[in-house]
Length: 482
Image (cartoon, rainbow, N blue to C red; front, side, top):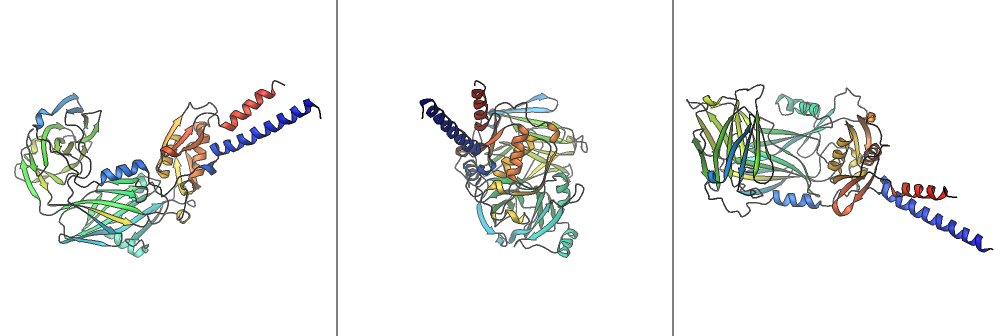
Protein backbone atom coordinates (compact mmCIF):
# COMPACT_ATOMS: atom_id res chain seq x y z
CA UNK A 1 0.00 0.00 0.00
CA UNK A 2 1.55 3.26 -1.04
CA UNK A 3 2.13 6.17 1.27
CA UNK A 4 -0.48 8.42 -0.39
CA UNK A 5 -3.22 5.83 0.10
CA UNK A 6 -2.32 5.36 3.77
CA UNK A 7 -2.52 9.10 4.33
CA UNK A 8 -5.94 9.13 2.65
CA UNK A 9 -7.25 6.32 4.85
CA UNK A 10 -5.98 8.03 8.01
CA UNK A 11 -7.55 11.32 6.95
CA UNK A 12 -10.85 9.55 6.31
CA UNK A 13 -10.76 7.87 9.73
CA UNK A 14 -9.94 11.19 11.40
CA UNK A 15 -12.81 12.84 9.55
CA UNK A 16 -15.22 10.10 10.64
CA UNK A 17 -14.00 10.33 14.25
CA UNK A 18 -14.49 14.08 14.36
CA UNK A 19 -17.88 13.70 12.70
CA UNK A 20 -19.09 11.14 15.27
CA UNK A 21 -17.76 13.25 18.14
CA UNK A 22 -19.57 16.28 16.75
CA UNK A 23 -22.77 14.30 16.47
CA UNK A 24 -22.51 13.30 20.13
CA UNK A 25 -21.70 16.84 21.24
CA UNK A 26 -24.42 18.26 19.04
CA UNK A 27 -26.94 15.83 20.45
CA UNK A 28 -25.92 16.74 24.00
CA UNK A 29 -26.40 20.41 23.21
CA UNK A 30 -29.53 20.39 21.06
CA UNK A 31 -31.56 17.28 21.85
CA UNK A 32 -34.51 17.64 24.19
CA UNK A 33 -33.68 14.16 25.48
CA UNK A 34 -30.82 15.70 27.44
CA UNK A 35 -32.93 18.44 28.96
CA UNK A 36 -33.45 17.67 32.63
CA UNK A 37 -34.98 19.34 35.67
CA UNK A 38 -35.26 17.43 38.95
CA UNK A 39 -38.75 17.80 40.52
CA UNK A 40 -37.42 17.05 44.01
CA UNK A 41 -34.06 18.81 44.23
CA UNK A 42 -34.11 21.93 46.46
CA UNK A 43 -33.48 25.15 44.53
CA UNK A 44 -30.78 27.12 46.38
CA UNK A 45 -32.39 30.53 45.81
CA UNK A 46 -35.79 29.19 46.84
CA UNK A 47 -34.35 27.60 49.98
CA UNK A 48 -32.82 30.94 50.98
CA UNK A 49 -36.12 32.71 50.35
CA UNK A 50 -37.96 30.07 52.40
CA UNK A 51 -35.54 30.43 55.30
CA UNK A 52 -35.93 34.21 55.29
CA UNK A 53 -39.71 33.94 54.97
CA UNK A 54 -39.97 31.39 57.75
CA UNK A 55 -37.62 33.09 60.21
CA UNK A 56 -39.65 33.62 63.34
CA UNK A 57 -39.08 36.88 65.24
CA UNK A 58 -35.45 37.50 64.14
CA UNK A 59 -33.38 39.68 66.41
CA UNK A 60 -33.54 43.29 65.40
CA UNK A 61 -32.90 46.67 66.91
CA UNK A 62 -36.05 48.79 66.97
CA UNK A 63 -35.32 52.18 65.45
CA UNK A 64 -35.27 54.75 68.22
CA UNK A 65 -34.47 57.95 66.36
CA UNK A 66 -37.15 60.45 65.49
CA UNK A 67 -38.94 59.21 62.38
CA UNK A 68 -39.15 62.70 60.96
CA UNK A 69 -35.37 63.01 60.95
CA UNK A 70 -35.02 59.81 58.92
CA UNK A 71 -37.50 60.29 56.08
CA UNK A 72 -38.45 62.89 53.51
CA UNK A 73 -41.70 62.92 51.54
CA UNK A 74 -41.67 65.09 48.42
CA UNK A 75 -44.11 65.62 45.56
CA UNK A 76 -42.53 64.72 42.22
CA UNK A 77 -45.62 65.10 40.04
CA UNK A 78 -49.39 65.31 40.21
CA UNK A 79 -49.57 61.52 40.58
CA UNK A 80 -46.33 60.64 42.35
CA UNK A 81 -44.77 61.32 45.72
CA UNK A 82 -41.29 60.09 46.62
CA UNK A 83 -40.18 58.89 50.03
CA UNK A 84 -36.47 58.84 50.83
CA UNK A 85 -35.06 57.50 54.09
CA UNK A 86 -31.84 56.58 55.86
CA UNK A 87 -33.26 53.65 57.81
CA UNK A 88 -31.55 50.93 55.77
CA UNK A 89 -33.41 47.80 54.72
CA UNK A 90 -36.13 46.49 57.05
CA UNK A 91 -35.38 43.21 58.85
CA UNK A 92 -36.51 40.05 57.08
CA UNK A 93 -38.69 37.31 58.46
CA UNK A 94 -42.11 37.50 60.06
CA UNK A 95 -41.53 39.89 62.95
CA UNK A 96 -45.04 39.95 64.36
CA UNK A 97 -46.00 36.27 64.45
CA UNK A 98 -46.06 34.71 67.90
CA UNK A 99 -46.07 31.00 67.03
CA UNK A 100 -46.05 28.53 64.13
CA UNK A 101 -48.40 25.55 63.92
CA UNK A 102 -48.31 22.66 61.43
CA UNK A 103 -51.26 20.49 60.44
CA UNK A 104 -52.12 17.98 57.72
CA UNK A 105 -54.63 18.93 55.03
CA UNK A 106 -57.45 16.90 56.62
CA UNK A 107 -56.81 18.15 60.16
CA UNK A 108 -58.32 21.08 62.06
CA UNK A 109 -56.27 23.26 64.36
CA UNK A 110 -57.89 24.06 67.72
CA UNK A 111 -56.44 27.18 69.27
CA UNK A 112 -57.52 30.11 71.47
CA UNK A 113 -61.17 29.06 71.53
CA UNK A 114 -61.44 28.61 67.75
CA UNK A 115 -60.82 26.09 64.99
CA UNK A 116 -59.06 26.54 61.68
CA UNK A 117 -58.37 24.35 58.66
CA UNK A 118 -58.74 23.64 54.97
CA UNK A 119 -62.30 23.10 53.72
CA UNK A 120 -62.12 22.57 49.94
CA UNK A 121 -59.90 22.98 46.91
CA UNK A 122 -61.49 23.94 43.61
CA UNK A 123 -59.79 23.30 40.27
CA UNK A 124 -60.65 24.68 36.83
CA UNK A 125 -58.78 23.26 33.82
CA UNK A 126 -59.19 22.98 30.08
CA UNK A 127 -58.34 19.67 28.42
CA UNK A 128 -57.34 18.74 24.86
CA UNK A 129 -60.91 17.71 24.01
CA UNK A 130 -62.20 21.23 24.69
CA UNK A 131 -62.86 23.57 21.79
CA UNK A 132 -61.86 27.23 21.85
CA UNK A 133 -65.14 28.51 23.29
CA UNK A 134 -65.80 25.61 25.64
CA UNK A 135 -65.81 26.42 29.36
CA UNK A 136 -63.21 24.71 31.54
CA UNK A 137 -63.94 21.60 33.54
CA UNK A 138 -64.63 22.38 37.20
CA UNK A 139 -63.83 19.95 39.98
CA UNK A 140 -63.88 20.36 43.75
CA UNK A 141 -62.06 18.30 46.38
CA UNK A 142 -62.46 18.14 50.15
CA UNK A 143 -59.62 18.47 52.65
CA UNK A 144 -58.88 14.76 52.27
CA UNK A 145 -58.50 15.35 48.49
CA UNK A 146 -61.61 13.27 47.72
CA UNK A 147 -63.61 14.66 44.81
CA UNK A 148 -67.04 16.09 45.64
CA UNK A 149 -70.23 15.18 43.83
CA UNK A 150 -72.26 17.65 41.76
CA UNK A 151 -74.81 17.81 44.57
CA UNK A 152 -72.12 18.76 47.09
CA UNK A 153 -70.70 21.37 44.72
CA UNK A 154 -74.16 22.88 44.23
CA UNK A 155 -74.50 23.19 47.99
CA UNK A 156 -71.19 25.07 48.16
CA UNK A 157 -72.33 27.42 45.43
CA UNK A 158 -75.52 28.16 47.33
CA UNK A 159 -73.32 29.16 50.26
CA UNK A 160 -71.34 31.47 47.99
CA UNK A 161 -68.15 29.51 48.68
CA UNK A 162 -67.11 28.57 45.18
CA UNK A 163 -66.71 31.32 42.62
CA UNK A 164 -63.76 30.10 40.63
CA UNK A 165 -65.39 30.85 37.28
CA UNK A 166 -64.56 34.55 37.44
CA UNK A 167 -60.94 33.83 38.30
CA UNK A 168 -60.61 31.36 35.44
CA UNK A 169 -62.03 33.83 32.91
CA UNK A 170 -59.19 36.19 33.79
CA UNK A 171 -56.53 33.44 33.75
CA UNK A 172 -57.40 30.97 31.00
CA UNK A 173 -54.42 28.69 31.72
CA UNK A 174 -56.30 27.42 34.76
CA UNK A 175 -57.11 28.28 38.35
CA UNK A 176 -57.16 26.87 41.85
CA UNK A 177 -59.35 28.02 44.69
CA UNK A 178 -58.70 27.30 48.36
CA UNK A 179 -61.46 27.66 50.93
CA UNK A 180 -60.36 27.86 54.58
CA UNK A 181 -62.79 27.40 57.44
CA UNK A 182 -62.45 29.30 60.71
CA UNK A 183 -64.82 29.12 63.68
CA UNK A 184 -64.80 30.97 66.99
CA UNK A 185 -62.70 33.93 65.81
CA UNK A 186 -64.69 37.06 64.97
CA UNK A 187 -63.98 38.95 61.77
CA UNK A 188 -61.67 37.83 58.99
CA UNK A 189 -58.51 36.45 60.65
CA UNK A 190 -56.58 35.61 57.47
CA UNK A 191 -53.98 38.21 56.57
CA UNK A 192 -51.89 36.51 53.90
CA UNK A 193 -51.22 33.14 52.29
CA UNK A 194 -48.33 31.58 50.39
CA UNK A 195 -48.06 28.26 48.54
CA UNK A 196 -44.70 26.46 48.41
CA UNK A 197 -43.35 23.34 46.79
CA UNK A 198 -42.45 21.34 49.90
CA UNK A 199 -39.41 19.71 48.28
CA UNK A 200 -37.79 22.43 46.19
CA UNK A 201 -39.06 25.25 48.47
CA UNK A 202 -40.12 27.25 45.42
CA UNK A 203 -42.85 29.80 46.17
CA UNK A 204 -45.65 28.84 43.77
CA UNK A 205 -48.17 31.58 44.53
CA UNK A 206 -49.19 34.12 47.15
CA UNK A 207 -51.81 36.74 47.86
CA UNK A 208 -54.46 38.07 50.18
CA UNK A 209 -58.09 37.38 51.01
CA UNK A 210 -60.55 37.27 48.11
CA UNK A 211 -63.97 36.62 49.64
CA UNK A 212 -65.53 35.64 52.95
CA UNK A 213 -68.83 34.01 53.84
CA UNK A 214 -70.21 32.46 57.02
CA UNK A 215 -66.99 31.57 58.83
CA UNK A 216 -65.10 30.64 55.67
CA UNK A 217 -62.53 32.58 53.69
CA UNK A 218 -61.67 31.82 50.09
CA UNK A 219 -58.92 32.94 47.81
CA UNK A 220 -57.98 32.01 44.29
CA UNK A 221 -54.81 31.79 42.29
CA UNK A 222 -53.89 31.19 38.70
CA UNK A 223 -52.65 27.66 38.18
CA UNK A 224 -49.59 27.35 40.40
CA UNK A 225 -46.33 26.65 38.63
CA UNK A 226 -46.56 23.00 39.60
CA UNK A 227 -48.27 20.70 37.13
CA UNK A 228 -46.85 17.50 38.62
CA UNK A 229 -47.78 15.50 41.69
CA UNK A 230 -45.74 16.40 44.74
CA UNK A 231 -46.18 17.70 48.30
CA UNK A 232 -46.97 21.38 48.83
CA UNK A 233 -47.21 23.61 51.89
CA UNK A 234 -50.00 26.15 52.19
CA UNK A 235 -48.77 28.78 54.66
CA UNK A 236 -51.49 31.01 56.13
CA UNK A 237 -50.94 33.94 58.49
CA UNK A 238 -53.85 34.67 60.82
CA UNK A 239 -54.44 37.49 63.32
CA UNK A 240 -57.37 37.44 65.73
CA UNK A 241 -58.49 38.00 69.31
CA UNK A 242 -59.62 41.08 71.26
CA UNK A 243 -57.59 43.88 69.66
CA UNK A 244 -55.79 46.80 71.20
CA UNK A 245 -57.47 49.85 69.65
CA UNK A 246 -55.93 53.22 68.84
CA UNK A 247 -57.66 56.29 67.40
CA UNK A 248 -55.93 59.40 66.09
CA UNK A 249 -56.62 62.37 63.79
CA UNK A 250 -55.71 62.10 60.09
CA UNK A 251 -52.82 64.52 60.44
CA UNK A 252 -49.12 63.99 59.64
CA UNK A 253 -47.23 62.84 62.73
CA UNK A 254 -50.22 61.12 64.30
CA UNK A 255 -50.17 57.36 64.80
CA UNK A 256 -49.66 54.67 67.42
CA UNK A 257 -47.07 52.45 69.07
CA UNK A 258 -47.75 48.87 70.15
CA UNK A 259 -44.85 46.80 71.44
CA UNK A 260 -42.03 47.09 68.88
CA UNK A 261 -44.46 48.32 66.24
CA UNK A 262 -44.54 52.06 65.58
CA UNK A 263 -46.73 53.52 62.78
CA UNK A 264 -46.89 57.22 61.94
CA UNK A 265 -48.89 59.04 59.29
CA UNK A 266 -46.50 60.78 56.88
CA UNK A 267 -48.91 62.44 54.51
CA UNK A 268 -52.32 62.49 52.84
CA UNK A 269 -52.90 62.64 49.09
CA UNK A 270 -55.91 62.80 46.83
CA UNK A 271 -56.97 59.83 44.70
CA UNK A 272 -57.40 56.25 45.75
CA UNK A 273 -55.40 53.91 43.51
CA UNK A 274 -51.90 53.26 44.79
CA UNK A 275 -48.73 51.38 43.99
CA UNK A 276 -45.63 51.50 46.17
CA UNK A 277 -42.39 50.44 44.48
CA UNK A 278 -38.75 50.52 45.66
CA UNK A 279 -36.54 52.63 43.38
CA UNK A 280 -32.98 52.18 44.52
CA UNK A 281 -31.60 52.15 48.03
CA UNK A 282 -33.52 54.32 50.48
CA UNK A 283 -36.21 55.40 48.00
CA UNK A 284 -39.84 54.44 47.45
CA UNK A 285 -42.00 55.76 44.61
CA UNK A 286 -45.64 56.12 45.61
CA UNK A 287 -47.87 56.50 42.56
CA UNK A 288 -51.49 57.52 43.03
CA UNK A 289 -54.21 58.04 40.48
CA UNK A 290 -57.94 58.65 40.47
CA UNK A 291 -60.16 55.59 40.35
CA UNK A 292 -63.21 55.55 38.11
CA UNK A 293 -65.51 54.57 40.98
CA UNK A 294 -64.01 56.88 43.59
CA UNK A 295 -62.44 59.96 41.96
CA UNK A 296 -62.60 61.83 45.27
CA UNK A 297 -60.83 59.12 47.28
CA UNK A 298 -57.98 59.76 49.69
CA UNK A 299 -54.72 57.93 50.43
CA UNK A 300 -52.94 57.86 53.80
CA UNK A 301 -49.21 57.12 53.76
CA UNK A 302 -47.89 55.44 56.92
CA UNK A 303 -44.30 54.77 57.94
CA UNK A 304 -44.14 51.63 60.08
CA UNK A 305 -41.20 50.17 61.95
CA UNK A 306 -39.61 47.67 62.17
CA UNK A 307 -41.43 46.87 58.88
CA UNK A 308 -44.77 47.49 57.18
CA UNK A 309 -44.88 43.95 55.79
CA UNK A 310 -47.58 41.66 57.20
CA UNK A 311 -48.92 44.15 59.71
CA UNK A 312 -51.31 42.49 62.20
CA UNK A 313 -53.40 45.66 62.07
CA UNK A 314 -56.81 46.57 60.64
CA UNK A 315 -57.33 50.23 59.76
CA UNK A 316 -60.74 51.92 59.74
CA UNK A 317 -61.81 55.42 58.74
CA UNK A 318 -64.40 57.21 60.89
CA UNK A 319 -66.56 60.24 60.19
CA UNK A 320 -67.33 62.97 62.73
CA UNK A 321 -70.10 60.85 64.27
CA UNK A 322 -67.92 57.77 64.68
CA UNK A 323 -69.40 55.84 61.75
CA UNK A 324 -67.07 53.58 59.79
CA UNK A 325 -66.48 54.79 56.22
CA UNK A 326 -65.96 52.54 53.25
CA UNK A 327 -62.34 51.60 52.62
CA UNK A 328 -60.68 50.49 49.39
CA UNK A 329 -57.51 48.62 50.27
CA UNK A 330 -53.79 49.08 50.73
CA UNK A 331 -50.38 48.82 49.11
CA UNK A 332 -47.18 48.05 51.00
CA UNK A 333 -43.42 47.99 50.42
CA UNK A 334 -40.59 48.14 52.93
CA UNK A 335 -41.43 50.55 55.72
CA UNK A 336 -44.41 52.10 53.96
CA UNK A 337 -48.05 51.10 53.77
CA UNK A 338 -50.61 53.21 51.96
CA UNK A 339 -54.17 52.86 53.24
CA UNK A 340 -56.76 54.34 50.97
CA UNK A 341 -60.47 55.00 51.08
CA UNK A 342 -62.97 56.02 48.43
CA UNK A 343 -64.13 58.85 50.71
CA UNK A 344 -62.92 62.47 50.38
CA UNK A 345 -60.55 63.81 53.01
CA UNK A 346 -63.19 66.14 54.44
CA UNK A 347 -65.29 63.17 55.61
CA UNK A 348 -62.47 61.42 57.50
CA UNK A 349 -62.42 62.74 61.07
CA UNK A 350 -60.46 59.95 62.79
CA UNK A 351 -58.44 56.86 61.92
CA UNK A 352 -58.78 53.70 63.98
CA UNK A 353 -56.03 51.06 64.17
CA UNK A 354 -56.92 47.66 65.66
CA UNK A 355 -53.90 45.54 66.63
CA UNK A 356 -54.75 41.85 66.96
CA UNK A 357 -54.08 40.05 70.22
CA UNK A 358 -52.86 36.83 68.57
CA UNK A 359 -50.74 36.44 65.45
CA UNK A 360 -50.14 32.87 64.26
CA UNK A 361 -48.70 31.13 61.23
CA UNK A 362 -50.38 27.90 60.15
CA UNK A 363 -48.57 25.54 57.76
CA UNK A 364 -50.97 23.12 56.06
CA UNK A 365 -49.19 20.13 54.51
CA UNK A 366 -50.85 18.77 51.37
CA UNK A 367 -49.61 15.52 49.77
CA UNK A 368 -50.26 17.07 46.34
CA UNK A 369 -52.49 19.45 44.43
CA UNK A 370 -55.57 17.54 43.28
CA UNK A 371 -57.02 17.46 39.78
CA UNK A 372 -53.77 17.60 37.82
CA UNK A 373 -53.22 15.24 34.84
CA UNK A 374 -52.75 11.61 35.88
CA UNK A 375 -49.76 11.33 33.52
CA UNK A 376 -47.86 13.74 35.79
CA UNK A 377 -48.19 11.65 38.93
CA UNK A 378 -44.73 10.05 39.06
CA UNK A 379 -42.54 12.14 36.78
CA UNK A 380 -38.79 12.16 37.48
CA UNK A 381 -37.97 14.90 34.96
CA UNK A 382 -40.03 18.08 34.75
CA UNK A 383 -39.47 18.23 30.99
CA UNK A 384 -41.71 15.13 30.81
CA UNK A 385 -44.65 16.89 32.50
CA UNK A 386 -47.65 17.12 30.19
CA UNK A 387 -49.78 20.25 29.92
CA UNK A 388 -53.42 19.62 28.89
CA UNK A 389 -53.95 23.04 27.32
CA UNK A 390 -52.03 26.29 27.10
CA UNK A 391 -51.84 29.21 24.69
CA UNK A 392 -49.03 31.76 24.31
CA UNK A 393 -49.14 35.14 22.62
CA UNK A 394 -45.37 35.44 22.12
CA UNK A 395 -42.01 33.84 22.86
CA UNK A 396 -41.60 35.89 26.02
CA UNK A 397 -44.66 34.20 27.53
CA UNK A 398 -43.20 30.80 26.71
CA UNK A 399 -39.88 31.68 28.35
CA UNK A 400 -41.67 32.83 31.48
CA UNK A 401 -43.84 29.70 31.50
CA UNK A 402 -40.81 27.43 31.17
CA UNK A 403 -39.00 29.17 34.01
CA UNK A 404 -41.98 28.81 36.33
CA UNK A 405 -42.93 25.22 35.52
CA UNK A 406 -39.34 23.94 35.51
CA UNK A 407 -38.50 26.02 38.60
CA UNK A 408 -35.38 27.26 36.84
CA UNK A 409 -33.89 30.62 36.01
CA UNK A 410 -33.91 31.48 32.30
CA UNK A 411 -31.46 33.43 30.19
CA UNK A 412 -30.92 34.42 26.57
CA UNK A 413 -27.50 34.95 25.03
CA UNK A 414 -26.47 36.22 21.63
CA UNK A 415 -28.45 38.05 18.96
CA UNK A 416 -31.55 36.53 17.42
CA UNK A 417 -30.61 35.34 13.92
CA UNK A 418 -32.56 36.31 10.82
CA UNK A 419 -33.56 32.69 10.30
CA UNK A 420 -35.78 32.71 13.42
CA UNK A 421 -39.37 31.63 12.87
CA UNK A 422 -41.56 34.67 12.06
CA UNK A 423 -43.97 36.07 14.63
CA UNK A 424 -46.88 34.78 12.52
CA UNK A 425 -46.67 31.49 14.42
CA UNK A 426 -48.19 33.24 17.44
CA UNK A 427 -50.51 32.86 19.19
CA UNK A 428 -49.25 29.31 19.71
CA UNK A 429 -51.58 26.71 21.21
CA UNK A 430 -50.58 23.38 22.75
CA UNK A 431 -52.84 20.47 23.68
CA UNK A 432 -51.55 17.51 25.68
CA UNK A 433 -47.98 18.62 25.06
CA UNK A 434 -44.91 17.94 27.18
CA UNK A 435 -42.83 20.78 28.52
CA UNK A 436 -40.05 19.39 26.32
CA UNK A 437 -42.29 19.91 23.26
CA UNK A 438 -42.97 23.49 24.30
CA UNK A 439 -39.26 24.12 24.99
CA UNK A 440 -38.25 22.82 21.55
CA UNK A 441 -40.89 25.00 19.90
CA UNK A 442 -39.57 28.01 21.81
CA UNK A 443 -35.97 27.33 20.74
CA UNK A 444 -37.00 26.95 17.11
CA UNK A 445 -39.15 30.08 17.20
CA UNK A 446 -36.22 32.07 18.56
CA UNK A 447 -33.66 30.58 16.17
CA UNK A 448 -31.43 29.14 18.88
CA UNK A 449 -30.87 26.02 20.92
CA UNK A 450 -31.31 25.15 24.61
CA UNK A 451 -28.79 24.00 27.13
CA UNK A 452 -28.89 23.46 30.89
CA UNK A 453 -26.55 25.32 33.22
CA UNK A 454 -26.67 22.86 36.12
CA UNK A 455 -24.43 24.88 38.41
CA UNK A 456 -26.86 27.82 38.36
CA UNK A 457 -30.12 25.89 37.80
CA UNK A 458 -30.64 27.82 34.58
CA UNK A 459 -32.30 27.10 31.23
CA UNK A 460 -30.27 28.92 28.59
CA UNK A 461 -31.43 29.85 25.10
CA UNK A 462 -28.31 30.30 22.99
CA UNK A 463 -28.63 32.48 19.89
CA UNK A 464 -25.70 30.97 18.01
CA UNK A 465 -24.86 27.95 15.94
CA UNK A 466 -24.85 24.62 17.67
CA UNK A 467 -21.55 22.68 17.67
CA UNK A 468 -22.97 20.33 15.04
CA UNK A 469 -23.92 23.22 12.73
CA UNK A 470 -20.47 24.72 13.16
CA UNK A 471 -18.88 21.41 12.19
CA UNK A 472 -20.92 21.12 9.00
CA UNK A 473 -20.01 24.69 8.07
CA UNK A 474 -16.32 23.93 8.75
CA UNK A 475 -16.41 20.72 6.71
CA UNK A 476 -18.17 22.55 3.88
CA UNK A 477 -15.44 25.15 3.83
CA UNK A 478 -12.75 22.44 3.67
CA UNK A 479 -14.55 20.58 0.90
CA UNK A 480 -14.85 23.75 -1.17
CA UNK A 481 -11.07 23.95 -1.32
CA UNK A 482 -10.73 20.64 -3.15
